[in-house]
Amino acid sequence: MSKNKHIGSDFDVFLAEQGELEEATAIAVKRVIAWQIEQAMQTTGVNKSALAKRMHTSRTVVDRMLDATDTGLTLETMTRAATALGFRVRVDLVAA
Image 1: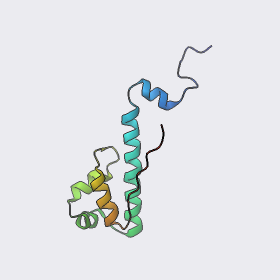
Image 2: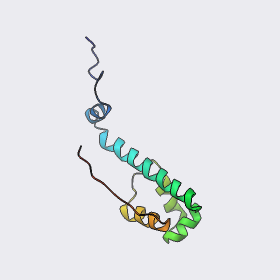
Image 3: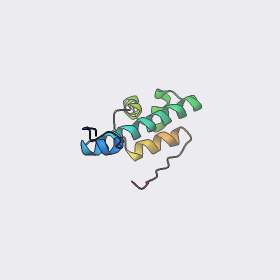
Image 4: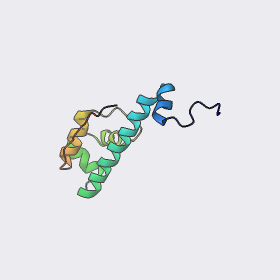
């Protein structure tokens, strides 16, 4: 019998036991959002400066929005970016 209690367990369970599940989830979600915005920018041929202009904001805000580790993105900023790129935001809550 193994002495490691985590062998065979779920990684989410491990993160929860360490008190790091919420932070890890937030970072993972932000990485996906940043990637999706970058993909939309490439698809539409819009660079960071043009996106900032379309959003009526600064390039610094766009840089923070695209920073995969900055989890402080607001729904308002995300929606403004999506609209500026010709997309819309859809948010789903799913059972844990």
